[in-house]
Length: 356
Ligand code: KG4
Ligand code: ZN
Image 1 (tube, protein in one colour):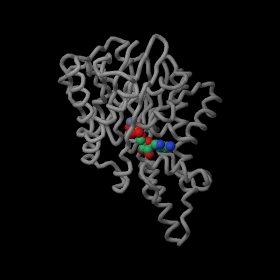
Image 2: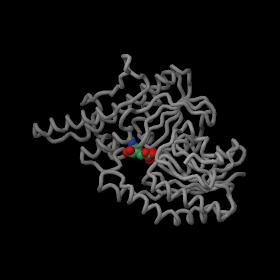
Image 3: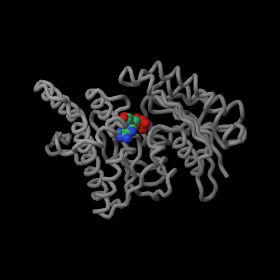
Image 4: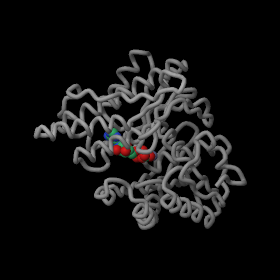
């Protein structure tokens, strides 16, 4: 049996988890998340300085709780893992330094994990997950990407957003509707009572220089502006703002765009399995519609469990266990953090000479 202590501090959730894996079974023995959203809410977004400080304050307590719950000591683990990229540098540094210190003091290996690889691994925390090759729609606050997973560590990005990520669009539209941060859950809640067909918002497309459109790419900044214009028009007419209808219409168009382009991409690449992960993948309307439309094309859809869609450390542990399984025994203790790093180059995090 392999066991991992995993840390996640790339943005505004401090998280620690303990995972165990034997031949056939992956188990989360403990998973603690301390969200800072309330503190960032009044600023309408994440304040990096506040994020780093809060991580520093709560992380030792979360580690302690996970050790008590799992009944393990740090020296018992096969490795200590921490997210090292991408994210807010100061925030990443807290998890990385904590992880490297625990690993060094207890003479266990350290594994630096790419945050997106963590999101991709989150599907394996559910009841069933596919074998490669398959297509992943990764939709979070920082990323909207279509990724072909060819083998456990061969990733190819087939589509991406050219401006805002889908989660960012939820956050910005929520803000202009006067809803709370993070916007996704707030919009989902009010949209339940709204009509998704009342407003027709644009399905942003990205033009190719040579003409036509990129078929699997996204653009959400125009959508946000269209919602803003609609709100301004309604307010100028002194109407009561139909927040539920706006939220539902917005949620619907985001779901339509994500689903249509994902399914198109899967069909064009001959992939029969589609995985959806990341914070926005928790969205009920998106999950239900994706399942429905994909089944019409005989595409099987797998979701990360809702609890592991938004940032958590169990997904980081799942990615670390995969790395161990495929021979990436450790990262250098000299490995630092980086605000950006391509997923396709995640292998370099296990080189003796670290890339950052
Ligand atoms: O994966 P995540 O926790 O962090 C990043 O790595 O970015 O994603 C956070 C994003 C936020 O933008 C939030 O508004 C969005 O996911 N989100 C949702 C829902 N829950 C979280 N968006 C739509 N519907 C939801 N239920
Ligand atoms: Zn994330």
